[in-house]
Length: 201
Image 1 (cartoon, rainbow, N blue to C red):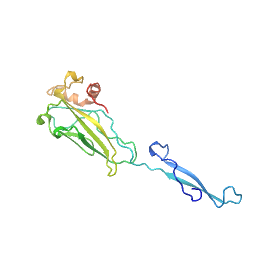
Image 2: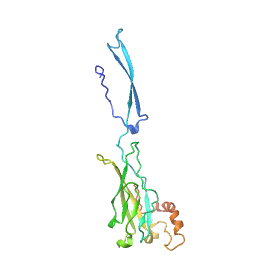
Image 3: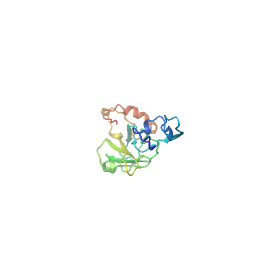
Image 4: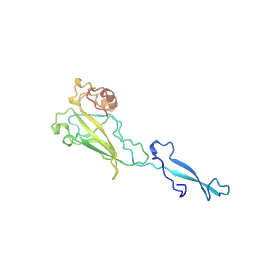
């Protein structure tokens, strides 16, 4: 307001769409209307810093796939690390969890790193499934806001994949090719992208 010196915003500022996070206003104050020939005027500059805040949810860059044996127990080798991305600069910690699809609690996830571990084998659980689809959630660790996203980790069982699935079939358990196959697991991702039953988010 000209008579009081109050400064107000005419529209909301958005840190994520602004080219600069600093704004400068040239201000003046006069003891009489500026048009008066006897007016005495002083000038100053107001520097405004626009801060980034937690208003953007984290996100994933799927697809995520893993292959296991019927007797497997331990960490899962995933085609790419399950890691949430953030588009702001606040640096809020992320928390990971399995929301759905964890039949008989076969798997758990490190809430800090997102690494998935199998704590019970498919054989021990007596499950007939040839794949499991785990709904993974990543959210910002905030007490007052729910900023989260989900992705699907598809876990396929080696011995139950068939030609009809349209996927690359891994070598047999006792094959000498197993080590090489595991070391080049990322190549499998090229084949599974064409699987008719794959889900992409």
